[in-house]
Amino acid sequence: MSNGSSSNNNNNNTARFDAARRVAIFGGTHGNEMSGVTLVNLWMQNSAEIQRKGLEIKPFITNPKAVEKCVRYVDTDLNRAFTQENLSATGGDELPYEVQRAQEINRMFGPKGSAEAYDVIFDLHNTTSNMGCTLILESSKDAFNLQMMNYIKKAFAPASCLVLLNEHPLLKYSTSRSVAKHPVGMEVGPQPQGVLRSNIFEAMRVILKHALDFISLFNEGMEFPPCTVEVFRVLERMDYPRDANGNIIAMVHPNLQDCDWEPLNPGDPMFQTFDGKTIHYQGSSTVYPTFINEAAYYEKQQAFVTTRRETLAASAIRKA
Amino acid sequence: MPVRLPRLSRAAVCGGTHGNELSGVYLVREMLKPENRKEDGGPASLLMLLSNPRAVQQCTRYVDTDLNRCFTHATLNGPASEGAPYEIFRARELNNLLGPKGSRAAVDLICDLHNTTANMGLCFIAYSDCDWVCLHIFRHLQMPDTPMRFIHFDVSTKESYSLDSIGKHGFAMEIGPQPHGCIKSNIYTAMREGVQHMRDWVSCFNSGESNVSMAQLPVCRGFKTSKCFLSQDRDFCLLRPGEPLFQTFSGETVKYQGAEALYAFFINECAYYKKGIALSLARKRRVSVPSIRVQTDEEERASEQSFASEEEE
Image 1 (tube, rainbow over the protein chains, first blue to last red):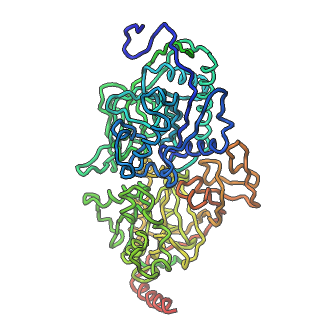
Image 2: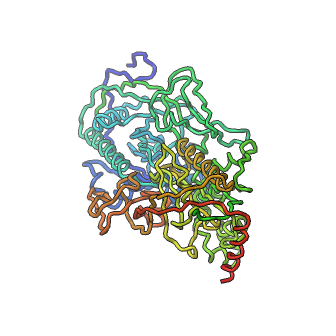
Image 3: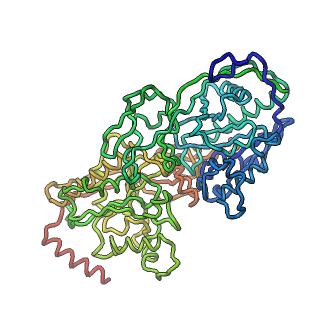
């Protein structure tokens, strides 16, 4: 039973989950994020590397038209398209391409929220931000995912793999992976859009291997004892300073550029105008910014997001 | 004796030739603001413009076709057609505005602003290794925090295809690494300073005050490109025969098989994937640059006459 602490899952009982038999690996949700596109294409040709006993693992390109054109999306961002409204929309061919794709993916890997949905979906992404390896968690109460992320972090150490928690009621969005029971985002950067960097590619490949190992061990009956996981919880989105016409009038400050996950204190430099003036962070407490200067977020009015550090507790888990 | 060259009366600074290379886009926008236009005694006229406004608006490299390959004589003077790609239409507009290419009416100097995802620092890219104006500007630009190189692409004037080839003198100022669609403050600052130094030099040259002296400059001559993909971020490091070039997806190393040690650059430039180029190779050499000085009015009139007779040939 919960001990009253608001944001953790501290439970002396072992949580039981069904074996995770159906797993998908999504690449190309954004068509110009090359690590996932390349890995999924590789594994669709030769899946030896990702095979595990008793487990169906399906590599899948979610946005083939965007991949072909090497753009983020064709009509609308696929990774924002899995809203209930979109999934139940009528209109067939008239719908934006990505909405049609979302419905198709929901049929194949969902339906979202149902018992038939895939157990786990890994959604592979890159970012121009200096985020290193990041796992993205959508719920602080998903003990299975928390245990998986704990396992991956330990297996990947001493290299760093951090966890970003986006449970914010307004900033949370309907991702392609959200059709699964346990959605896991994997974000590796920095890498320019449309570019393949070997170190970034290898890192993503390794964390995915650890993730599949975890699922395999879990399915074989291993019990994972209670653990704690350090996460960075999304607080707010910070936009670029803009003029009355909406044009950007300042850039991420050189002191902040590439400093994802490092503390940003009140009064620290945050933006630099084109003529060299500094704009300082005016918040009331220290925050940990991330997604700093992600190219794709200029149009989403986001220069970076702020987070706070939290420790989540996960109950022990075992196959039901 | 310094080489005498005509005044650089008209110059142009162009940003957004590729719409997602943002340093130049933002710099030109800033320079166009009324509060930033200044009298600096430089060229009698300094044009600042966004070369590919549609691509800038969409934050994409180009709409139909790469604008920076559209400035060959053949493309500029070919038959006009309704259905022509947007960039060809735009190239002809720019040629009317800044050229015509090869004519006496062309602007004296074009500086075309670019970014690359490759770790190249600041590069001048030019077709000529004996355009003394460009070489002197490069020399003037020495910036303490930014590595700088001069790259000579050995393409004849007849075959030249880029925007800067419209002007009597021209070069691209290429700065990286920066992802496309992103603006990094240190890269922007370097470009802003580079353009300011260029303006200062032109101002100085035109005034005839300083005797811009002789120099020996290292120049990279890029002459070969090949399907490779390399030691990431090591632009301008020497690549020797037998050194690692690629890593396959199954972890094997593919080695450089060329006979000669060369300098690799434009390593892993995003926009070149489609062109089948993973990196370019260059030889380094030293170029002797004579001292130069602006012509007197009399000298300018005399050389105009000889230009006219060259045109007739």
